[in-house]
Structure formats: C-alpha cells, structure tokens
Length: 467
Image (cartoon, rainbow, N blue to C red; front, side):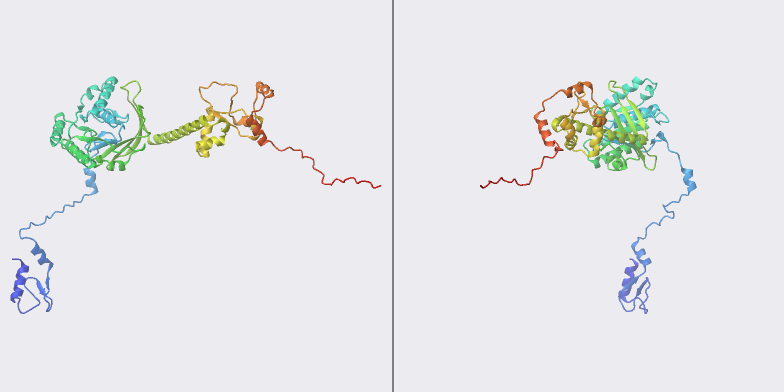
C-alpha cells in the first residue's frame, strides 16, 4: 500500500496523535482545515514503482575539445577531385532533354578509366562502376560505346569493367531491392549510378522520394556510393538551378551532394549544339557554377565535344545572346511592316506606328536594316521633296540592282548626289500625275506678290448740264 493511502487511513481513524498539524508520512494539516499538503518527495516516490532502475551516471551529451576535433579530422576522399566525394549520396538533377543521362554515362567512363570529367575534374583512381537504367538509356550507352571505341586512347580495357543493367525492373518489389544488393556485391562495385527516370515513372512525389530512399540505403549497405539521376517535374526557364529547385524535387530527400543541370537558352528540336548551366553543391562542402557547351556534331554520330566555361564568361555570353535575340525579333518585325505597307504612305513615322515599337527600339532596328542595305528611299518629286516626307521601301536581298533605286544615306538627305543621267532625266518634261497635282495644290505656298488693292473712293457720276 502506498504512503498516501496509509496516511489517509490514519487520518480517518484518528491515529495521528495529539498534534493535529503533524503526521508520520509527510502530511501536514493546515490548522483546522481539511486540505492536505503532501511533500514533493513523497509524490515522486508514490508515482515510481519500487523496481525502477537507477538513472545512468554518464550523460549522453559528450564534450569534445578543439584539439580532439582536429585529431579526429579525416580529409575527404574524392570520386572526382573538387566535384564529388566518396560515401556521400549524390544527385544529378535537370529537366527533360537536359542531357542528364548523357553526362551520367560520361561520368561512368571517367570514373572507370581514371580520366577526366568535362575536361577538368580528375578521378584519382579507377573505380568499379555500375549503371542501372531503363530501356531508354540503352541508346545513350550505345552511342557512347561507339564514341569510346572510335577514340582508341588505350582506355577501352578499363571501360570494359563498367557493369550495365539496362532492363526495366519494378523497384517497388522488395525482392528486386535485395537482388540489387546481391548484384552490387557480386561485382564488388564501388559506385552505382541509378537513372531513376524509368524506375519512378507514374509515381507521386511522395512515393518517388520513398523509393529513392530505399535504393540509396541498399547501395550504402553494400558499401557503394550511389549517384541518382533524376528529372524535374516541371520545365524551368533557361537559368541556373539552385538549392530551392532541389528542395522541391523528390530526390532532394537523399541528396548530400548534387549537380544541377539546366539550359542557358531555349531548347530547339534538332539542334545538336547545347549550352548548359552546371551548378555544384553539397552539405557543407564545395560549391561552384560553370557553363557547359556540348557539340554532338551534325554528321558523325560518335562526336561528343565538351567545353567548360567560367561563370563570368557564361553569364556575359547569356547577356549578349539575349540582346542578339531581341534585335533579331525587332528586325523581323520591321521587315514585316515594310513588306506590307502602302508605298504612298510608307513614311518613317507611319512605319514606326505600324510596328508598335518604342522610339529607341525602332531607331536601333531602323539603323541595323539601313546598315545592312535592306531599306531604300524612293525618288521624290519636287513637291514631295520640298513639302512632303520621304517614302521608304524594303529591299529584297535577291532583288537585282537598278539605277532607279537610291539607297538611304543621311548625307544624301542634305546634299543630293546626282549623276549626269539624273540631270538629263530631270530636264525632260513630265506630265504630273493626279496625286502630284493634288499634293502641289495642297502644299503650294502663297504668292509673295500682293494683289492690287481696290480703291475705296466712290466714283462720281457726271451731272447733266442744265441749259
């Protein structure tokens, strides 16, 4: 029986003695009131069972000094010097058609042969590498196999050590996960690259994140460094990706280091020249950003040329490329108006109003087409030269040259340059057309001579003489 129950019984039976303010079990009476005051030590003793084990004498919060930290420090072991570390799950993330699988296969070749990745990052040794992907990756692997064979640089024997698993499997099946661990142990793999696009098709973001955790855990339990290749669920604009894009992707749950890929310019189908952004990051490790230019070649299917650019150089190129694209758009817009405008109304002001561009943009586009020889000024009559605005038209590059066309030149607007033939042609009398007549009558200046004024004196009628 607990101490509180015993004290209550003693109080009910009147066995507390002659002093009403004291009790044997730590219970005190407050004067004549019936409320009980129980000491905290008695409550703790009443709540705990008699066989409760004693608390450990050593606290789990351990103290480490600075010298101990320095003594325990071990330098990181690299898969690629300055880019990827060993024993840390890595992620390669990018949009669709972002060359993720191609760069992952090139990464396998660099790790297996002890070569360089992207022409700069060196593998310190030859690693035993395995690649897991679906049927879609077979074409990429075959193209790189032909490229490696054509290179004939003596590394083909090392590349033969890469183990490829290109069958579509159900990664949600626990039996297949166990088989993945057995496959890694059988080939004694040190690095496993997993192209997760085919393995996670049709999964929700939550289900995909759960599956990637299982795959990464399976590789780590088999003493292999996992590298997961994943794709974004939405198509981003051409820009460098950052950690916020990784956090919103399902693969962000397993990433301790990452390579983020995106395009520097909009994807154009059929274009085999690609300009990409590559962003490196890790949890407390190195980070960086570069521009990657890849040329796959037009005729040779085995061509693969990669150029790594500095961040500043790539950013400047993006700015210049954006200005060039904007200028080309303005030029096309101005050409379209010049082709459609009526020659009788093709003044510079009317053309600008038709384009809808601001003054600065229109002036820049106008000067570019004038410098390219695509705009001509039409020959003007005397009335149009003196009282009207110049008319312009677009010159087709395939149009043959003729003497009747006068190209626009700012100097010619002030000093009219004429040949002998132009003087002879102007000396010939020509009948003005109706439009020129109307323009001449409309804009003809007043005569400088004033008409004679009529006399205001009244005429005196001659009077008849009276005889």
